Image 1 (tube, one colour):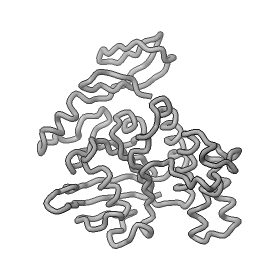
Image 2: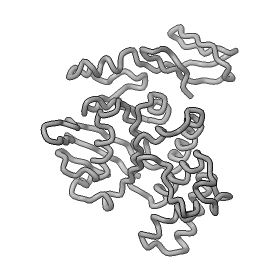
Image 3: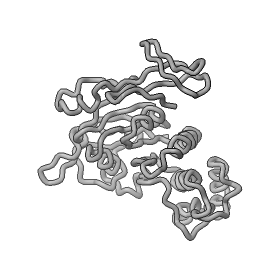
Image 4: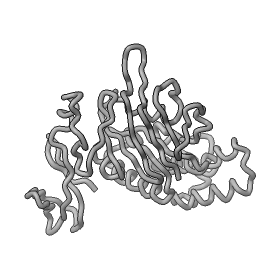
Length: 280
C-alpha cells in the first residue's frame, strides 16, 4: 500500500494560481475525499498527483520517495474521470484484462488476476457480457476492476458518481466503497457531494479557490480559513452529527429529531445551511 504526501504544491496558468501551497498526507490504504465547488482546483490536484500535470512547484512523494520527475505511466497512480468507461467491443473479462495484456503479463497470471477481480466485483457470471448488456452499477464495478487489476500505487477518482441517476447513486456508492475497502488501495476522491465525502472518506478536506482546508469529522474546518471569507460562507453551518433511528425518528444528542421510514439503526445527519438530511 502507498502513502501519498504532497508538500508545498503549487500550479499556475499565466497569472492564475490554480493550486496554492497544497499540503496533504494520505495514509496507506485509506480514502481521502476532497470536496468543493467546480473550478476550485480538485481535478488539477488529482492530475498533479498522477503526473498528468508536471510543471507544478512543490513535491509529490509516494512512500517517502519523490515522483516529481516521473511520467504518469511510471508513477503508477491511476486516475479515473468517470469510472464507467469500458471498451464497448470487449467483454467484461477482456476489459479487465486489457491493462495486463499491454504490460505483457503472461496468460496464466492474467487469467488468475482477472478471475480474482471478477469475484471481487461479483461479476463472474457476467464475464462474457458486453458493456451494453450490463446495468450502470455493473459497468461502474467493471471499470473499477479494470483499474485495480494492474495493482496501481494509488487510485484517483474524479467525480465518480456525477453522471448517475440519483436513484442509483446511493447503491453504487456503497458497492464501490466496499470494493475499495476489500482492495485496500490508497484512494483520493474528488467530489462536490457532501454525502459522498463524509460517507466514503476516512479524511475529508475542502478545496476552495486553489486552497486545501482540512475538515474535522463533524465537517468543521481544522483551522479558520482566514484567507478567504467566501470559504467560510461555503462551509457555513456545515456539520455532521451522530444519532440513532428508533421508532421512525432519527434523534441526536443536540436535539435534532427527523421523522423517517428507515428501520432502526445508527446513522448520521448532515446539517447544512439548507437544512438537515440523513446520510447512510
